[in-house]
Image (cartoon, rainbow, N blue to C red; front, side, top):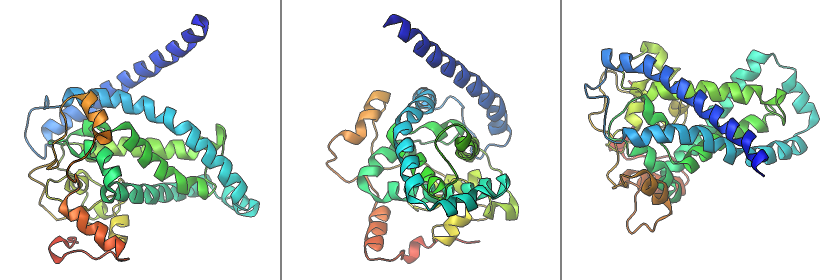
Length: 302
């Protein structure tokens, strides 16, 4: 038994060491940028940063374990449900085309999973941990309940597998792995405390300004995409003012301060709804079969 534990402990230690190295690289890259090009001037040692450091390691270790079985079942089901001719056609595409198709498909799946996390009260309980951050910086990207992280990633993987862009085994996991790396790196960037804008390109690729509005205290419930803002434009949820940035971040609900309490928070009885009035309005609109919004919440496309 002890001999079996040694390889497992070695593997975990190795993973933690790699994560510590990547965290060091992230700090070296983003800390100076957030000081030189800060969207909001503030101290780097903000409240809850200790929790977010733990979330960084937790959410880079746990989701991979929790996703392994659902991904295996998904791959097994897709291989038996999709016609072989379609899989052969997809396999015949150039690698760059399959990667681009996988990026759009995965982002579309993530968009709807993310949007549902704001619409369905049970999912919002988990997702609210991420939105409880009152200040934005690159580390907020991994501030999330592990179940929320798993749900979002799984939603992104579903269309990738359904299109035959991933298969069981190492060779078939190259495209989803590459897309995952792009998503993680860009996730740190769009959460960063940066005022950078890309001009006309910010309609094609997300920026911190785009995603900061998603975290605004004002419940606009917009900008659900992580890398492709034009998906929000297509589905009517884009909000991208030309110059303005949010002045406050977070949610009105009180989320516990301690890490253990935050992990338990979604499972506790909820005496009052934790979803904002704006989200409730969206639920009603979706139940009515439309995507109507109040005029006061009409997305800005400017």
